Length: 323
Image (cartoon, rainbow, N blue to C red; front, top):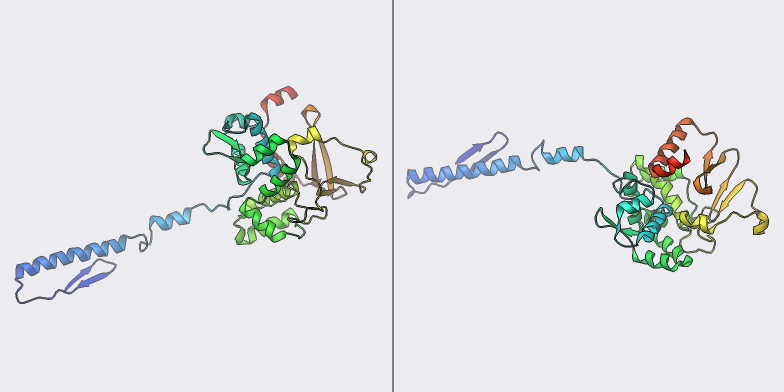
């Protein structure tokens, strides 16, 4: 019998001694057995499964936990990106040229990478590396045909491409959507969504903005996937609004909107003592509108500033002209 004590386990092998086996042969067999047992014991002790301080355990402990992939930019923003790519050449477009067309310095800009990834999640663009960017074929055909009905159809399809959005659309179909704060809380509390708390606010806001832009939300804030009769027309993309939409007075439209209400297809913004509208004059005669709660604490103003800086890098050329 040969026993091996390795400090953590003891292996025992029994060798039957036959009368015809000499002492030298027995010693040789015992030595071989001892070596085999030692090797087996060492392998067991040093395996990742049994080693208490293994690299595997330490890597799991220090690994960064991330939210599931989801768009961090709205469908309206990525559609505008896709239009810029289409105008540059539609297929195999240099990403630096695309980045500059949407007011980023180059394609290595972090915000540009974020909007590019969002456009891919929605199925508007494809890119195999960091050099070229292409619009997907259905969007190329629809942009070329200038087909409004086709755009509406593609928007509805695009907003259902991300896995997270499919889950939320299925859950809220024919139900009234929650506000951004409540939806954000639901996203990080329900583990099935895979969204961390620090990403939940953006995920909720982008989802709500995108489904509204896609025409899935009616005037009562209900999500309508199958019945589109109550949703109305779909808003134009940001790049088309200045060309195709002009403000009309109530007399021109023949309708009287409700007092103190800013209306948009599928969206109603009540302007009252709790919500204020701020008009911002932009270059080229354009205007931007901010809808902010009243009162607006200083910390929330800082939050707005950080968000604007994140999604829009200042154009150095236009900034110099403004000065």
